[in-house]
Image (cartoon, rainbow, N blue to C red; front, side):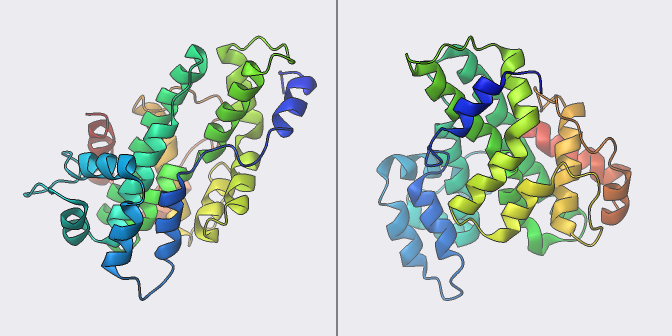
Length: 273
């Protein structure tokens, strides 16, 4: 750890309630836990947040999701894409809005983090399908989107510290990247636990940089492989903390051949368009 203990102390003092999730998107995620979920419940929940509704429609009609038909309403989007996919889009749309800051250096890093997280979401869903795990596609998308949520929390914390006139910290890119390396996994898991995110995704946050993994944990293997490859695809601008050092075990566990990896690269690069 090359940043000061004083800075770490102030980061740890920041409230855990710093906004890293949209309340409506969280409500949608909790709705999905109900096997008897009704489409009308999904639509009513989305409509609680008009700004989010607009972003969902915009994203649902983007090249990544639109397919053959354009949706004119939230109801059209839900009926066309289904509750799980719409919940993923809602989470992505709300996360995109949260990756912004009035502090230039923080905002710049947030924008890079969003591009990485969204590319990983698209990549994880693509890899799940191409490796014969289509049933994990929606979960893989959300796992890829949220795996680095600890970094967003840390950026929000650093932002608050910087805006506090009682503290005196000179923020620079190197310091922020050191904070990421040292704290993003532990803080990410803490955030997931606090907001009662399903353990499936909390486990991804906790273990996507672990030294080893259970080869039978397909979802974790997908996230680890996609996250690692994002560096080579230039979709991870801040790879200070590179672990694992290779993904041979993940490739073997997923039976990912060259054609699958080429498709993964294409889909992840395409997510930036």
